[in-house]
Image 1 (cartoon, rainbow, N blue to C red):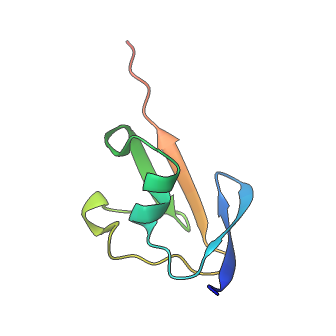
Image 2 (tube, rainbow, N blue to C red):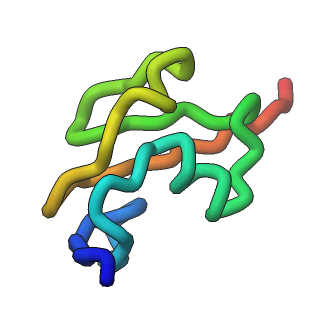
Length: 70
């Protein structure tokens, strides 16, 4: 049985499997990766590193959608 951890995504508490990568979280949430910025604990993450970063207990993830307009 996998251990579960608590994280916050855009201010809402979520329980996920321990050793979840940010890339897997984004895929599970069906977030369009090209149209968002991802922040982990108040630091913007380079999208090239998403597959290398594992989420930890109490991490705070903010997913910010870009909105076009003029």
